[in-house]
Image (cartoon, rainbow, N blue to C red; front, side, top):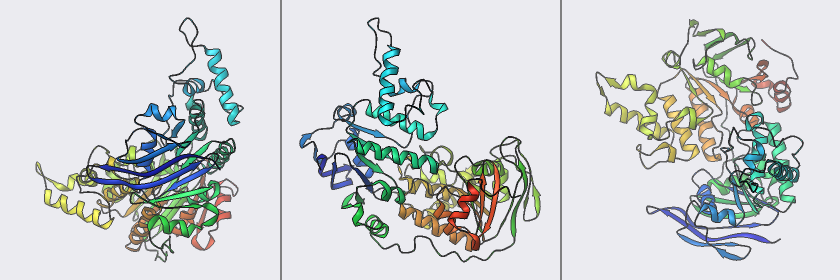
Length: 501
């Protein structure tokens, strides 16, 4: 098979630190080649070099056998390289056609945009992808699903005749159904001869669509393998450099007294009559498709959103929570699903973010107790094994897994009785996931009540002591550990088992 891209001995140094150290990578025409590694392994640095954002310190890049220099973003585009980022970049108030040809819209002799040609050209691109019937060239991004928006991003890349398509966590925000559709879509592109570099932390996807994999670790090239030659355990071993036989810790928890009781939560719009309890030492899983109402419940409990009617009891005492500060004072803390927008101040350092929730405890008079603050930050950096140069490291510069650890540190600093984790492992690598799983079970053993929300069914099945399923704003099932099975949880989560109060 024809090699379209080859990277030889690529190194990249930042102020003496080696982000990449003589890595190798090659890509063939018409293949899906997955690039794997823990956060901080060097994947993003390599991609930015291909995109013309970074210049390599050393090494050579060849396109179709010819050495090239990618010194700026325009060079990458000229060479047929396009990137579909995890964060979508469509302009919301422009049509699909306008987004596809943004900056390159055809014009008439008068200088005005030739709308007819624009729409015809956009239709042809969508037609090539087989989505012209479901995505209108006249539609606006807000009317599209996230998966359809991803397809528009891909259409934009193909409109400039991209030969190499880099996809960075393309399914991170998709439902299971949308994920299946997008993966079929990616396979179709491969069959059309497009060469695809695919980055994902979801191993099931990697095994489903990859032709080959390449693994980086700590900025170094580890191995390239045909997907047919490796097992899941082989890939994990290559990524983390050690055996991880027990990905999920043993869960043998003792259920203690009731910590939380929620009665008849109803917002009159979407959520309908939701009731549940949480006990000490329990990991209560919430499972449902994206949009089922899981996050909305937690936002009401934590006092972020208002307008729902419900009763909430903490250790038998009725509470009234109207804002997050009241929830925190009561012993409830939420680690939100979107850490970058809701969980962290990215331009601030680890120290600032860690103590953000407990500033009132650190301020005495008009001064902050710096000694106590330092002790708190050091405690959680050590406990969570956060990888950073120091507590002064800016959080926006950390890997996804280490950012999530800072979110957890901020939560744990409040010494909560109840910890709500909303998609705590989204977009982080296998090693960081394993550490979070261990932390969650350890906290439960110490008597903390855990509410664990995840779209990854294996996490729910392996970590939860009890599971509540949601579908379209309704509670559809409640299953003890002994009752859990993939088939039953999915049946309930897709509305196949009625409503349960």
